[in-house]
Structures are given as structure tokens and as C-alpha cells.
Length: 286
Length: 182
Image (cartoon, helix red, strand yellow):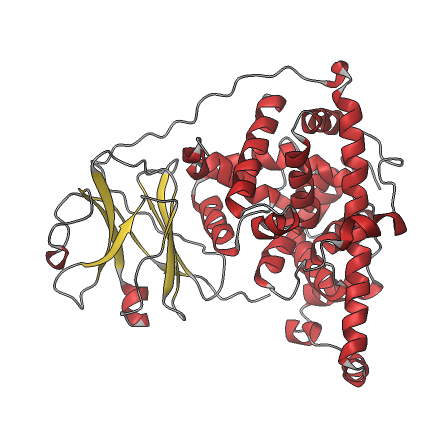
């Protein structure tokens, strides 16, 4: 893995978002960036154009007629979503009457049918692409891509708040210098007091470390949450803070000597290069 | 399915809250979208849920569709796939613990989607580029796209460490981008 630095580029994140291989928390981060970072949103659109044609290979399947009825009911506001998502009483009774074994077998059968179709598509497509690969008239010229540029100027601090977070129960903050280059994306699950920081465009600085701080009026000094940015992901330590503190705090990243601030109890020793506040995701109300 | 231009007109009418146009749009696109999300979710109840959310989003966001940037069906499929993948990533019960059955079961239920497709120029170029990928990476991309599989699931299927899957995916995607030259 000689090109590990590629992992962190917005380009690759956008591509994997569109392909669908990001984990749940990474998808939340990507969606927060789409909402707040026009340059990233543009990367995602470009990847949707590149890969979007693949759907042409998927055989159509008719949905059940109830689907349209439910969509209409939701548009009319006549059918609360709770009623839609609950199983019909008859159906629930029928399912309850079945033994676990029968249910499991049915699920396995359904799963097999679905994956068989999937494998068939992939097989057909592989056969096709292998054929097409030997037809040079189909091959477009290869253009060299521009190297990915990661611009960093750490003098400025710009606060940017996520205005429309995407998932309920989650807090998101984008730590960035400008709209084109989010440096870190912080997502926090207050219920479990867990968080993750994804390094996006903050390039590692030789002989320096990025350190994340929680700044709250409940504490006289910023509290260190640990170093971030050495790896693609970091898990800041939030377990010792209560939910109100976590959700109300400002989060700041400082540039410190390698290994972190020499006296973290006294707060950052180096310049604070990014700050942001968390914003709670609006609970979804379909 | 209706032509892309007809779908553009329908979306424009839907943006003005035209319910008749919305019904026609649904009729023209529902089977494609359902096919896409069912492959990812593998359960009709979940696919139904995602269909509802997708079409509500289409109803609310039709005005944001820009025919200069995308085709209607690609735009709608992207909405549906994103909803389906968001859901499947949160549902641990939808697992692929039986992925070893995939290939042997393939013969039983073989659609031939290529036979009835008209190939667009964009699709032709994409497939040509996919054909240039190393076979393993190509399969990885295809399974990820069609099945909505996570890196962990792909790692399990390909009997490869997750980090390797990540590297392969990254390289495959960069190769695709280079090949498409955009």
C-alpha cells in the first residue's frame, strides 16, 4: 500500500460514497460534506455520472401495488408513517404462527434468489466487459489525471457549521478552512458518547501533530480529546463528558509539537487552526 | 420505459406539483428502481420502505433536477441506491453470510439484462474501461455497485483483508476515472 495518502482525498471518498462501500459513519460524513461543501458535492455528482450507467444492467422488478398506494397516502398526509411501517395485523398474525425454522428457510430462499440474480448480472457484465476490452474502437483515450492537490494554509481559522445534518441522533461538525477543503469531519453519537474524526484534507505536517480539544464554558481550560490526523480515522475520547457538555461544546484542532501539547492540562500550546460547533441532526419526520 | 426526454418533461411537471405527471413518472420508473433496491436490500418490506422514501424525495426535489447534469433515471437511481445503502449499512440483520452460495446458485435464476438493453454511449465507454481493470478489481466494483456490499462484506466474499479491499477499490476507481478521462 504505497499510495495510502490517496485514502484521504475527497475524490476517493466521493467515489466510494457513490459506489456504496463506505461504512455508515463515513456515509454520514460524506452526506454532511455534500450539504456543506459544494466542491465535494461536485465530485459526487461527477462520480454519479461515471458509475450511474451501470443501473442499465439491472433487470426491472415490479414492486407490489401497495407501494404506490403508500406513497400517495404519504403525499396526502392521510397515512402516518408509523402505520405504514407496521405490519398489517393479519400479516403479523400469520408470521407469528410460523415456526422459526420455516421463517428462516423462507428468508434464506429469498436471499438465494436475490443473490443469484446479482451474480448473474455480474457474470453477464464481466463477460461483456471482457469482450469489449478487446475491441479497441470502444476504448477511449486515457488522459492523465491531474494530481490531487491538498492545499494547506494553517494561519486562518474559519468556523463553519453544518446547517442540515442528515441523520437523527447524531451530531456533525465540519472543521475546515474554506468550502473547498474540509480538514476534519467530526461525528458524535451522544447516546453512546462515541465519536470519530475523519481526516480529509488536513495534510500531516512534518514534526507536528494535530490535537483535538473540547472547549466548554464548564471548564476553565480546553480539554484534550487526543491526537487526530495521524491516521485516516481517530476516535476521540468523549466518555468522561456528559451529553450536554458534548453537544454544547466548541471543538478545536491545534497544531502541536509531535506527540501533542507538552502540558495538555493547560490547553493547546500551538495555534488553533480549525474550530467548529456540533449541530444536532434534525430528527427525521417523514 | 419512456425516453429520457419524456422523463425530463415529467420531472419538470412534478416540480410544479403535478400529481398526474408524478403517477406517470412512477409507472415509467418503478420497476427499474425496485429492481435496483431489491438487489441491495434483498427484502421486499425494506425495498418497499426505500421506494416510498425515494419517490417522496423525488416529489420534493424534482425542481433540483438539472437535465444538463444528469439523466432522469440516473438521478432517480442514485437517490434510491443511496437510501437503500444507508438502510443496509444500519441493518446488521441483512447480512451476506451465505455468499459462498452466490456463484453456484447463479444458474438457477439468470436474467439476461444485456439482451434487452439499448446501450448508451456512456455505458459503452464505462464498460470498455471496466474491461481494462484487473478481473478481481472489476468484480469487486460490480459486486459493490449491484449488491451494495460494504468493504467488510467484500473482504469476506473475496477472502481478502479489508485493507486490501480498500486498496483495490481505490485503485479501480482511480483507473476508471483515468480511463474515462473526465
